[in-house]
Image (tube, rainbow, N blue to C red; front, side):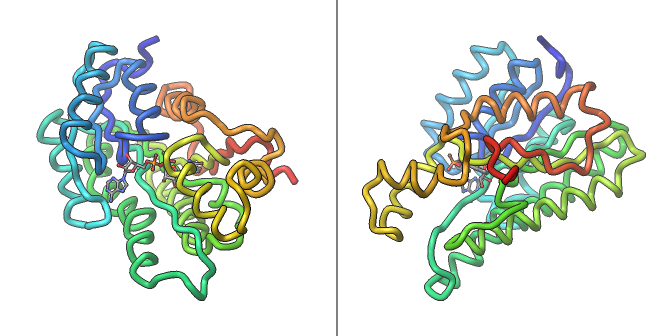
Length: 262
Ligand code: NAD
């Protein structure tokens, strides 16, 4: 399939986990892709080269720290400089920190909000003028099931993801007549390095061994009792970015193994 031939996509936080799967799904559909992440340069370069070789498309890499507003804006500028346009913006970079609210470090709150929420504002603000001029665009924000429901010990993450869902709806309304869609994708638990870290953190919080934390704590909320695979999220994003997704906008799309059906 090459539903995205001729399109250019910027995927933030795409050297790992969901972002990497999204970047691959978009490249497999023919898009040129700008990767971004916080991995060492040599690792990022080998990912970039592997993806370019596999899909036969142009793939770039820019190592911006998205928790810094100027770097977030500069990432958009670098993508425009290299590819000349951005048709698809996937705001995926994010972090989690699990702790009781009265023990949550102030500096971690600032960092989490800067990365999970403010970077979405800065990259979207910088990318929208080009999309408006083109009369076509797709903004996909990787929120979370925690954009619609909450869990204890995750108040800052839950707040950031609820905010991303609200931001996505408001942007969708603003650009609804301009050929641009904006959606929030809300996955449940996806098997990625971020979740592997949570298993360790939750084991400490709940004082349980890791195998019990996976089934009794992490997947307790997910009725399928299975992790979602990052490739499933990639396929949903590729659909939203295709012509078939043109009427889906302002939505919080749940892929949560039935979690929020309760
Ligand atoms: P991950 O830790 O595997 O990947 C995070 C990516 O973000 C990496 O590429 C990393 O390099 C990048 N990154 C981290 N800090 C950065 C920074 N300051 N600047 C630029 N890039 C940075 O995580 P993941 O599980 O793939 O999560 C990706 C997104 O999906 C996050 O927004 C997360 O909240 C969301 N999400 C994850 C799950 C899950 O179960 N894994 C569920 C719902 C939502």
